[in-house]
Image (tube, rainbow, N blue to C red; front, side):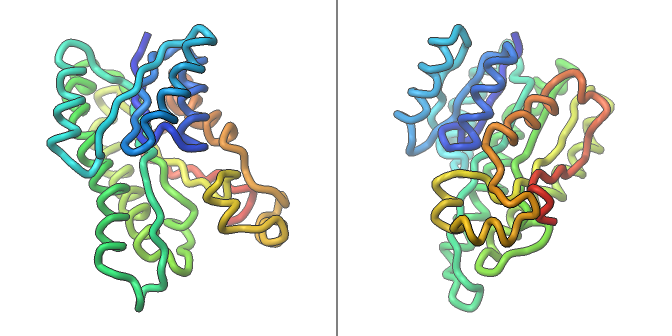
Length: 239
């Protein structure tokens, strides 16, 4: 049984990913920061169905906190599947964007990727098998008004994905990013009404978190062993 860590595992997409990976037979480490109770409910639901899961609590922007939790976990056994799903929005048009808005979004999406991935890297390399899946966004590909900070963070994550994939391909580790479009969640429901989705998306609907999770399951599996360094869009034809 491989261990899979999903950061930001308590949200709509994160929880769907956790459930899928557990159904695939992995022991799922569900990360949370402020949403520990929600993460525990997901872990409990997985275990009721016969799966294996536990909750990890830390702030991905705090490197000391990340290392304090993750380093003891990989001393004797690697975590071989990592889904870097933690991320936040703090939207504003650029002329009115405050420095705190810029730094916080970059810190969670980009520095969080570094802190968590770095902590797991050497044990994964020594095992000569691994899957790193980074959650990007359509905003990193097309840009989006009011999200210069978010697009910058996710665009940098795309570039990091490609570079890291080159570095560790020979070790049996793949590194890919998934760039969702409009996915049904509390966040998207507050940002897009049904008429806007029908106008913007050729498929005339928002994507389902489970559809993103199915892609994660495939990329995390042995079947995706020859796919690395890719930014894979899932957006209903939006771009």
